[in-house]
Image 1: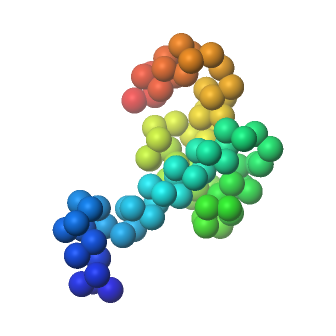
Image 2 (image 1 turned 45 degrees about the vertical axis):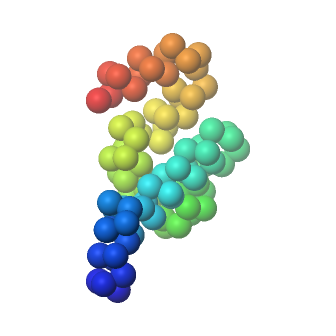
Length: 88
C-alpha cells in the first residue's frame, strides 16, 4: 500500500487518504445543500460513521461547520461570502 500511495502522491500531489477525504467532503456539501438529510445521515452517506468526527473533518476542509454551511447556503450570495470570510 505504501508504494501505491507514493505513486498516487507523485501524480496527484495528494495522498490517497487526502484525496478520498476531499471527495467525501465534496459529496457531503452536495448532500447538505439538498436539505432533506440530517448531518448524521450525510456523514453516514459519505462513509464517516461518527457525526462528530464528520463535523470536525468538514470544518477542517471547508472552514465552517456543516450547520454553518447549511445556513450560509440558504442565504443570499452576498451573505455566504461574508460568513466564509469571517470564519477564516
